[in-house]
Length: 213
Ligand code: ADP
Ligand code: AMP
Image 1: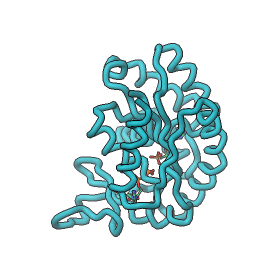
Image 2: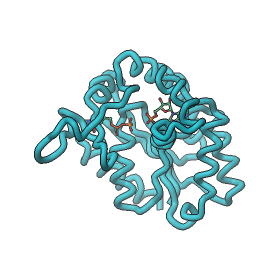
Image 3: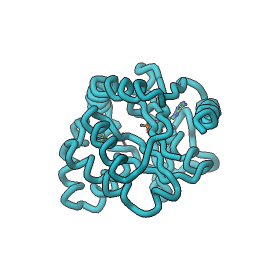
Image 4: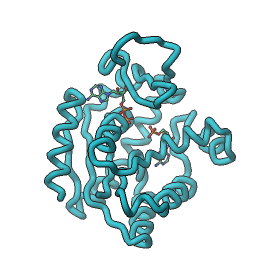
């Protein structure tokens, strides 16, 4: 099964992606995670990506298309399927993905579109905490870690600062609409109400996936 998960920053893509991967065994391909790993390793691509990410801007298409293409060509993908998270983020990336999938003989089965009220997103992003060891995402209030909470075991993303969040939301709102339209034309979009409890969102995603098969 080959899926995309879409939604504004903070919509809950990463949170739901972890659940989808656990249940369906697909490969999770998050361009944001790939850039953060490259930034942590200070690779040439990581240094370049950081100059955009720190400002809340998108990394240029040719860089992003390249890393996705390379990942999709790896041998586990045809076997397990994939869940793309945070890509495509421009219509040009959507066209590039169409080409890449065609060249690899793969096709998309569905697009999970998490719809949220943008007013709730600043609160979600400013409370987001990530476990250093596992990379698991939590929220200080909405999804706190169970058991003893030691602040030192978690970090907050640099780009979750309020000034960067605003720019990220503006950029993603402007770029997102044509992408969804592109997939609506193909009749493969499932709209999911994202302003519900995490488990209720996942239950709706499970139903949508069941209807795709
Ligand atoms: P994205 O990957 O779309 O940017 P995340 O999955 O990282 O979003 O979620 C952003 C923040 O919101 C995290 O702190 C997460 O724990 C929290 N969150 C995710 N889903 C929900 C939800 N349904 N209700 C409340 N908070 C949520
Ligand atoms: P995310 O983890 O998906 O919120 O992404 C974090 C940041 O990485 C974004 O704000 C962008 O700067 C960059 N990024 C992630 N995915 C893409 C993409 N598909 N195209 C361009 N930039 C991206």
